[in-house]
Amino acid sequence: MGDARKIDTAELALGVQSLGLGVAIVDPNTWNVIFENTKFGQWFPATEGASLDKRMTDLPMDRATARLSQGRKFTFQTVSKTSGRETPVAVDMSALNSDKNPSFLIECRDISKEKQTEYMLESYSKMAERHARELSREKERVDRLLLNIMPRTVYEEMKHYGMVTPQRFDHASVLLLDFVGFTDMAIAHSPGPIVAELNDIFTSFDRIVERFGCERIKTIGDAYMAVAGLPEPNPDHAQALARVALRMKRYIDRRNKVHPEAWRCRIGIGVGPVVGSILGVQKYVYDIFGPGVNLAARMEQMSEPMQITISEPSYLLLRDHFVCTERGTVDVKGFGPTKLYTLDSEQTVDHH
Image (tube, rainbow, N blue to C red):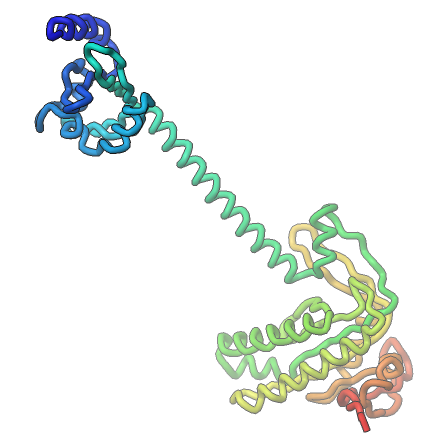
């Protein structure tokens, strides 16, 4: 039987020495290597003994034995560490069924190029994912910026069609607010704290406007413009914007009680037709113009500090739900004699 094994291995050696594969024959009882070609010896030198588990230190013996004893192939990956170099190796193990000389065939293949390809693909995949995340974040940032300067429905129209059709809104209310003495305040103080306070105030105004379904159109210096009834029609536009104005005034009142710098605002509300559209090509801005805007500006100019001024058209829409005080008739530029009112508060509901 010994001669037969010698003949077999000698014949096998002629066939496998020239291969790029590492090939070995293992005794299934002792796991000793009884034959190996040059490549196998280079990858897994017999410095710690002849058994395979000593030469392949990460060989999962139990799993390999279980599969091979069932006549099934066992495959795993390891790393050859010789001469300071690491070579990834795929190992295929199979049983050679022979009545005379049962044994295990070990075939090893250098998978450096495959690993390099996998690494490159993984790197490209991670790079693509990173770029996709960056693009997504950039898109979100651009979306937030655009939604900061135009209503969402206008933004959606622009995103889908690349342009916005100017629209006329016959039933809208416009609010214009500015702060008394802001210029003197800005000159007398460092710009940083003043701008920070103004930003804090406008941020709170934005929340109030959003709460009542209105739209902030723009800020110009210390002036703040908001609108109700566009771009989505709202039959209660006057009431919605009146509630916004009252809460803005209340917010400033409360803020002044806990902050050293007192801010005093004037608010005007106008009702009337307006046109809304995107203006500009490289620097977009959504703006509104028309009688409603002009009237709001006139009402703001007619207001005393911490006062909300409206005209008769607004009063007629608000009188059933709000407390207003008549101020008399004034000649308003562009509108002629106009009856003015102050908007004082919402009416309280008496349940008795």
